[in-house]
Image 1: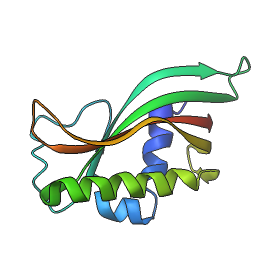
Image 2: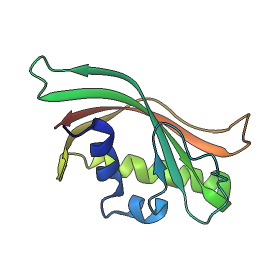
Image 3: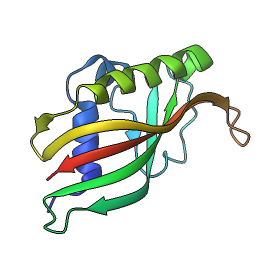
Image 4: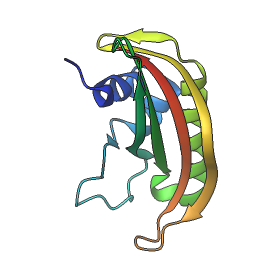
Length: 133
């Protein structure tokens, strides 16, 4: 069985302006230890916060926290990556090989902050997804 994380990653890295911007720099639940946020590309790290599933298992509704980083452009680019993520998820209901994200709704967040531990600028948003697969 394909994991929900695989479906999300496949959807977010499919050909789109978001995929071009992050260039495969997408991880769950944490970034690699050598991640320095110092390239010219943005990146995304996401974690699953909660999940509900239909009793038949046909659909799942995970809540994900997405952190969007901006690479060398920092704050402005972090907001750009967050905007591209929003645009990509607003065009949900597109099938990928491993499944389909049917809908995506902003559940909270949407703010730009500076992480205390890394000092990286990050745009964080919670999304409730409805996934078939």
